[in-house]
Image (cartoon, rainbow, N blue to C red; front, side, top):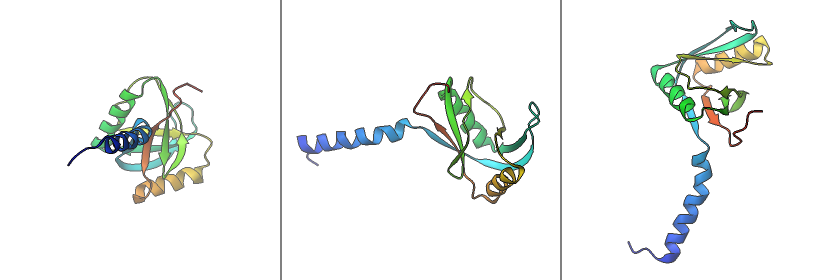
Length: 130
């Protein structure tokens, strides 16, 4: 294949357009199950998401890369919480709390347990703590 200046510039432009998508890092967590209970610290209703071994590794790797940043946790494409990552997390589970009713948490757990509720970690472009 012969590369012309025009084709090289086109390839560079394409890579530049793809760079923001690569820069916004997403990690899909492999989930074992989800259940609804209470947060031990606050007593609020909470969604406990239990991770597989690969999910735990994904959580640890993602949070190690995003220390001192706010990240979004999405369930089925919707942001359910946006915690500040102060240090890497190496855990078999994550807890989601917030302004959710018990029935909303039950619905999220049901989606996850059916396998239709994908759990994704997404780094925010804005790195500031808000």
